[in-house]
Image (cartoon, rainbow, N blue to C red; front, side, top):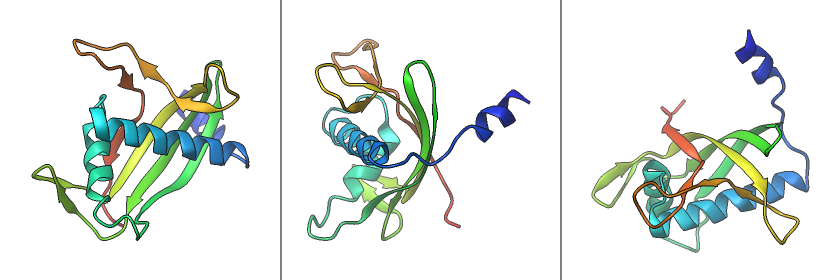
Length: 136
């Protein structure tokens, strides 16, 4: 019952919030791709989409969010055109289903994906979690 109530409260965010949250996702994906901070699958997805910078082939779709005391908890789909590709000698899925907690950035009025303290490494860990989706 609680799951149904939580799902019912999710809705697509309105602009300009949606644009700020998408920017936070891109920022976190770029950071994760460079330093690997806890979301290997998203890192594979992002790096497999960097073959041709002239052709935008990475997309954020179907964002739904709910407000909580920390900020916004959102689910969304990451889609990369062109199907499964190889990155770091692994098959990188073209479609991921993700969730992330967004919190206010310190010193600005924007949003960022929440990061947790490091666990045995030098870098914080992203709250963004992704799972591979089958193509529909």
